Length: 235
Image (cartoon, rainbow, N blue to C red; front, side, top):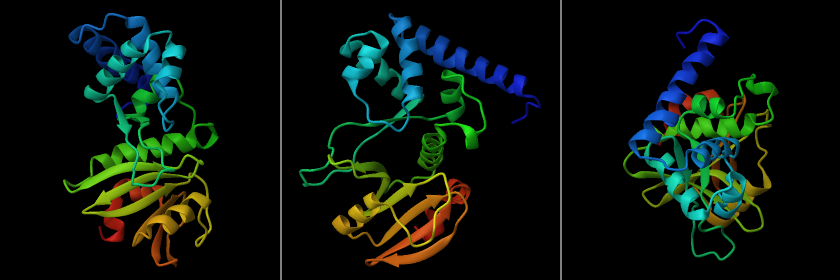
């Protein structure tokens, strides 16, 4: 933020990335296969918000599953990445094991894939917004709150499920404009299955409150939710 030019900002990111992610972690934890580790950082950065498939990732970075698993754990424990676990119940149609990968810092993520174009013209804008909102709200989570994602084997998915004292609040994220009162099919599916008291639909610029099948749905601009989190709905 203190750098005045694009070149200075990229140079600053480069210094942070190379000193911490590439040098400190590699040296301190004695990473043996630096080539696989470097590829893994780039692969994880390119797949934010996607389900993690260890066999597929191992093929992409040309390493074995054991090594990839070890290095993914290193990235998580050194606060480079965060692996979002699925929200599961006794329903047989839910994804129960695969985590989704995110970066704690989106600047480090963007540097890893050398992508610095404006968010409104880049193909990963939705995933990047999702990553930013997760990383910012992880800082705001209270001790009695946990965050997950929800997905069925048929493909219905909710970006975040915030669980608090046995209650769940689904949070769906859309980077574009929405119309107050409309929901995705996945959102309807979750409401029908779990009947949450509150739900959040994050979008570009609309704020509104409506009630759908007994659930109070809050439409909240992304920048508001980034700053205030669940405080906006009295949680």
